[in-house]
Length: 315
Length: 315
Image 1 (cartoon, rainbow over the protein chains, first blue to last red):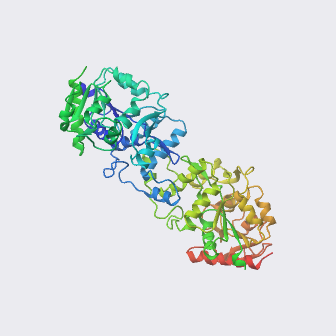
Image 2: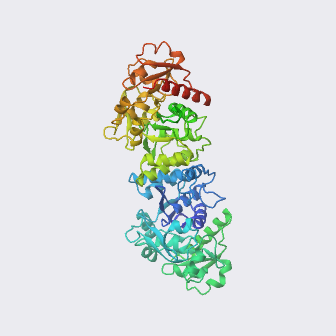
Image 3: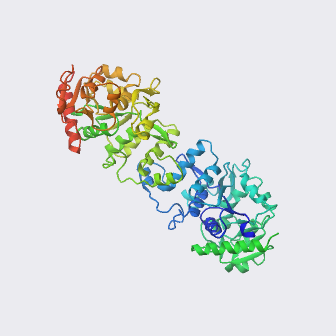
């Protein structure tokens, strides 16, 4: 039965995590593996912060903050207030509970554990049945070529609020990074049901995963259908700087351009119903669905649409 | 005028900080230098924690927690709760606001700043006019020889709740530690009004300061009177394991034994009024005073008694 076969999802943070949660809810426990972007990771205040892994950790465990859209629920901010009084850096907001993840992770990384082993322990302790893998246990850090020069990701994203004009990207460390073995094994698994590219920013959430040597080739060679969900609806990004970046990069700001971005390994594209005309000219199977995930049920509905498309398209 | 002359206080944590606060309140701004015990300092969760320096920082800035007797007021505990869920070490309780001190300090130590420079910045940011110095910028760590073997200080003090029987102490690192230059300069200052040994545990709060090479000799040679306030009242310690340790070390558990402990550099001893008979046989000037500091006014009254005794005893 297809329902018991493994599913692999590639995801960035908040946007991708919505579909990841939908998949997690509709799939049997432990059939889902989610590979997270690590390009946003950075060292801050001496701590290793992994925003996308943590967003997935919190989202899948029910610890995510529904109001903020990032961080943890029932969060307190005593640490930040005290840090500001002591003259500490306050541009990157770390909640008190969130801080525990960074402190515990950093201590264990320093002790020699791999990021994947630590995150695997965390997700189990938080009761998550799905596997949650960093794309690599090596560092891959997104940097942006902008009108203000080369910027580290969080400088661009948080400190400068995505204001600089982006000309390009690099994924520092990707040349020598090794994909997590479980990631490549999942892609090569003959029982794999589908690879799902979540509706994350293609440039800063998915490309850092694809930049790890061997990943793109593995996706091209994958026997299971590779399906991407458009992060662009009606020419606008649901969240974040995707549309702004596409414009700055000279790309058409539409759902079709994202499909083209993944064209070398993509088998099916899921676009929003409003983008029927935009994706009509694509030379690959396209399915239209309501892709805007507002409430929990939207996520599960979209997850079912994606899985059904995959099952119809079995190569 | 004596009121404008510098005063030097040696202090551990909570008990000593009470008198330090009294001195801070009755002395003119910036005449007071407080040298803090660093023997309690330790690395925990990858952070450098300095309990006595921080207790003094919080006490003098009005940030101390009046209910707990340690830590910060208006503290939250979201970090510890989240850390426990992730399997992190929870035996040493770190409040969310307190954590900011450790994170900011550790980041700056890693960047190469000295502990004293960091604490001096912290105390200024928190509006403290008194100088607050670690006994040394080098590490001096108290270890205890106990019936359960050699123990690091916080293992004994917090994890094992002072339960092991103590046979002796060592101050790891003290052989090569250099006293803070401001500390020795303060002791040698010809204008110095007094050196005040706060009513802290002599073995684990004051001895680690005295163990730094040159400190004991400097105190012996000091031109200003050296005055200690007894931490023992009526054969009992106001707080902590002082009395228990004295018993385990085979010492009389009384105020006189503490004076003897400091005998080689002590000029005046302040004991509680209830200990008149106990200290009658001491071969140094003794003054009796109410030494139990319960409310804020007690601290100021005792501070005035100590300063007056010093002024009468000017060598």
